[in-house]
Image (cartoon, rainbow, N blue to C red; front, side, top):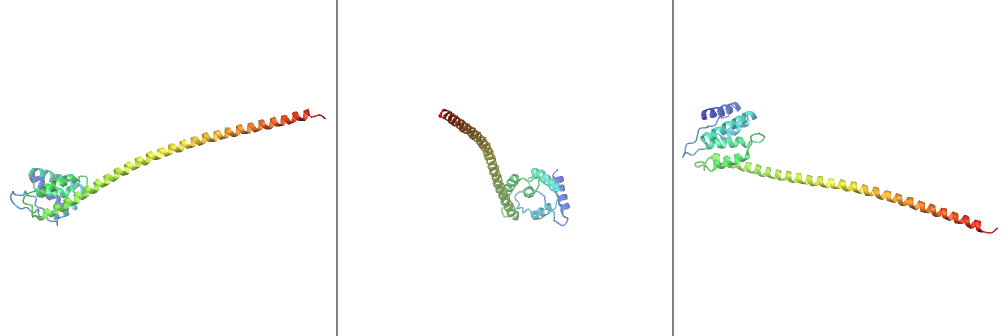
Length: 203
């Protein structure tokens, strides 16, 4: 099964670019200083693969990494899982894989260690940025909720104000009607008194 996984990895990389040197996927021997030669070539090769092929390759590397626990395969898997715009990107798994790789004995002075350190810094920065984006998104969502609540209250107040204005207009109309009736009654009474006074005046 290990050989099948390695064969699939090699085949995918050869498909990506025939001129790119394929990487060595053999297991590191205990006590030897492994350099993980070809890491940059691996990154270049997988960048030429289709999304489907990248997905197949990461599955093969996952299976191979679980079987032989090859630190170099851990690094290669971390490279794949850190690639943006893929449906299998997993920064949390990348962080774990790279920390395991950096803590592996025999890799203290390996050139691949510098690459792994750079990659973990990039992933951590991306996680930090994503956390800030999530925080800002949540804050914006909360602000939108508050704004919508205030807008509803303002609309309710506007409706209440219109209702009060309508009632005030009705009261003012009633008051004008009463005043007009009182003035009309007063005028009628005055005219009546005047007529009665004229009738009482001797000729």
